[in-house]
Each structure stands twice: as structure tokens, then as C-alpha cells.
Length: 269
Image (cartoon, rainbow, N blue to C red; front, side, top):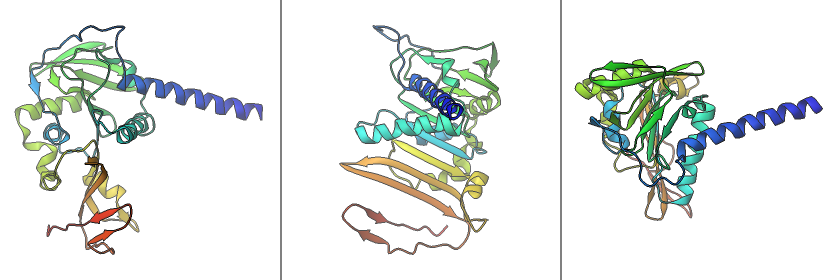
């Protein structure tokens, strides 16, 4: 029993330490900062998840996006919890942000792709990364370092900051010159039908979607979108799917009860 309790205590301590490191992602500042240092930005990807997808390779199968500027307390708390979940449980690399620090008190937005690659909006503030060496790729400086067993490169001359596997970071830089092979090449016809902005989004595409969305082992869709936002005082969840077979919803097109409103729209393709 003592060994069992000791093991539980160790796991609990590890989880608490991981959450502390995750918290440093969302809230880190120097003591009494009067004004954040600014960094040079050579390229701007825009301010929204939709514009960021223009610089994500079309081979990407997994995308999750967090907007920490959400004003609703409940939804913002949900976003923080999802961030902790993805960094600690999904990517299983909570140590990454131990070596990455902004010089402001919070992140504005973050996108994680294929579990290990990040785009991070820290406005124009200067950031720091514990790197081992520098490489230059197409006039951009890549600061490369190893975090546990992962190799990462930080590119802070762009907005948002790139923190990713070096090869993935180079693909993003390539798309700044020529965006023909970006994520939207294959899936833009679906995302263009999803109107408005979101505070939290989750996307699966291609083989990642086929592996996750099955019916008795058979893939049923090659694209899935899930987004959360406030619509006035109402919490709104939007789901979009592209089926690769003949499937249908069994509910009526519009239903209304005391708490939930559903609306379904189908496209021919």
C-alpha cells in the first residue's frame, strides 16, 4: 500500500509540475516589465486561424487552434484546459516551453499542428529560446535546439512565431514564397464554408481523419472541423465534415429544446 501511494504521489507531482510548465506558456513575465522588448518581423501571416492555414503544409493532418483573447470567462477557461490537455497528454512534451519564453505576460493565440509544431502569437514582443546553433534558410534565422528527444527550431522573424521541427519550419517558410501547396489547397473549399471566427478550433484532414472517423473499421470522412465561439450570450459549436461515402443524419434538419439548437446544412460535394 505504501508503494502504491508513493507511486500515485509521484504521478500527481509530475502532473502538477507539467501544469506549472504549461502555465508558463500562458502567463510569463519579467518582474515589473515597463515595456516589452520588440522583435524584428519580416513576414506577417495575419491574425486568425484561417489566414494561418495558408502557411501550413497540405500534408498536415491535425490542427488545433487556441485564442486566449476570448472575453467570456467560461469559454476562456475551457481553452486553457484544452491547451493543458494537448501539451501534456497529446503532444506529451510539456518540457518544450521550458526553453521558450516571451517577454510579455501572456500568449494571444496558438496553433498546434501534427502534435509537435506550433505557431504562437506573442504580438511583436521579443522571445527567447535555449538553442544550440543557428541556421539560415531563405533569409530567415532558425534557432535550433533539442528538447528532451525532440529537435525544434524557432523562427521569430515572422508573426506568429514558428516553433517546430526544423523540416516543418522550412516548409512553412517555403509557403511564404509560394503558397500553392498549403493546407487550403486540398481543404480550402471546406473551410471557406465555415463562416466567422472561433476561439477554439480542431481539425482533422486526410489520413488522420480517415483513421479517426470510421464506421465498423471503414473510413467515413476525410475532413473534420470543430469550432467553439460566443454568439452573443450563446455558446456556439460548429461542426463540418466531408463524407467519403453515403451517410446521413437521422435527426430532423432543425430541432429546438430548452438548451440546444441544431441546424444542418448539406453540400452536394
